[in-house]
Length: 429
Image (cartoon, rainbow, N blue to C red):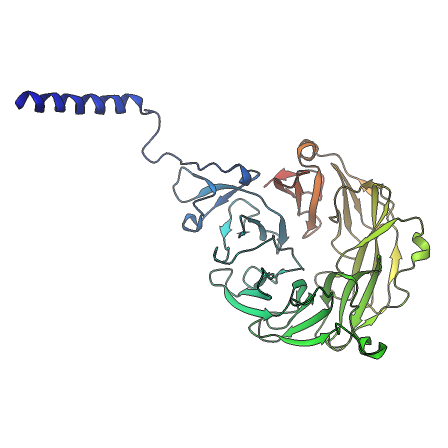
């Protein structure tokens, strides 16, 4: 019996010695743990609240034990100040939303609950809107339920509250004028294949919504369609300058058009003569983006549109200097670019200054697009666009600071970049 015990003890000692020999002596007890997930490779973010990390993400604990690094795929972003911005993407039906307040050095995970599933990633101005770092809304479009879920926060994502819009197919535009009043445009009816439009208004931060306009699925006569958004047409975006005046851009019968309201979204009328098709007869098709009024001065704004010829596209714009009462076409003397992406690669900071990206080439204007200066080519940007050729979004907060999101052709990976010298040089955030 004693010999058996001695034999078992010897086996245990040998197993312990073997385990010790096989361990890596260079690794400390609190060495980083990485969970591989190739679908999430791309952008590396340093997260400051590790308790919010999803265990399915690729993570690595940093040496101070208080920060984590993750790799994730971003699909959109929005700059809120010269130091603060949001970036997000949806993976495996979960929305992952991050905020930085130090120019991308560190990020905070402010995602809503993973129990709220997203079939696609939200887009700013379509189903995502933030006024500032504290106040924002995210819309989860219908997933086989006929009900859109509207999430809202007023404390930077610490708490998300929920409301719903029943019997809608999809939300196609959202805009908030302030923390209380906002509008949503929906398209389609859950019970039919109709493209009928509806406008909803909230005056209590999105807790409740009232339908203030709808296009009839079947109109009894032409008068039933008066003062409405068009039933047939693709909504591109919406913007309001005050509680009464707003604009919606539409790709209608294949051509850009603009609709205006002067009574808070109840009635809408087409801005006649806004788009002159005869000037663009050589274009095979068009795209149009959301109307945008520049920060701090709602008298000045623009609506960008794209003209496609064969496999090339050029963006140009209609500008206003009187709050949308009148519009002027401004051609851009920039090169045509390959039509391999539907995303707008031109942005304006104000009524004079703008940027246009063509691969690794960055053009800059300070005279409303009359003249464009090709900036010195950034070595880092040139390197990145070889692997990430698609410009997904570009935004400048001031004349120096801008962000750029680029993606691979298969859209599986993306990188968020930043310039702090007006577009001359770029670095990955």
